[in-house]
Length: 328
Figure (tube, helix red, strand yellow):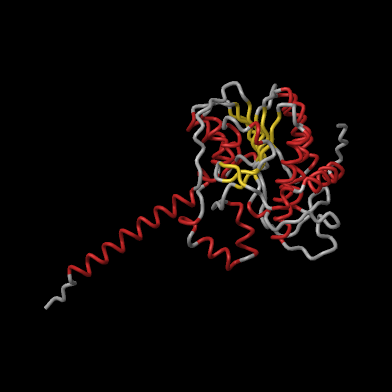
């Protein structure tokens, strides 16, 4: 004889299933975070995005192209960048998407890129400092600087200051710098920026570079006050992209934990790009220059991110490291 499940138990199972599904949907919506609601067009504007061939950089580039902007994708790997650009042209119908080579680990490459950009482009309305590396093994660039500091901060620092005149002449213009919540607990190790005296820890180095992003954005806003150039830093969220590949190698247990719940607990690249897009195009942000954003809203950075004296000192040290003479 078949054992039939009582109808009351079936009802209980059904209720639990419904509650579970609703809970998961609400959790997923919360994880997704804010969405940029601006419908502003960017026809006649030029947007430059670093690391635009993959992840949130690619989704940001796609959005800018949808809005009618001329999009310049600054990428290290030209083959992958050309493939991504072709896809963006196809999905948006915007053929005004260009690819330029830029290796942020090389100050020589940054200077060459800027020279070519100034010779070929009339304006720069939005600069999105998006590219980055995360918790990679210790390495030194051709300039002798620790890789995360060099790529995440110094390369973007030099790129931005060399393009300031173009940004000023195109004003109102914006500089958007992708940082991370990992800046919390970070510290600028002025006495050992490249970890030559102390043991290298990839997480400590990453936090330093992301704090540097926040401080750079804040100091840039102060220096650009009154010029029409505004500056914003942001946390895009925890996103399942190629950026985490070194994390999974260096911290295998954490890598497994990140892989299993990735669908539910991490943003998609499209979701992760929303705050970058918001900072780039949303109206009324002029008075928020120097602020830190997350989920398309202003959020307070860590106390270290408010330190104006450290921000000023970091700017001066960075200018010296990249060989830039600040005449302001």
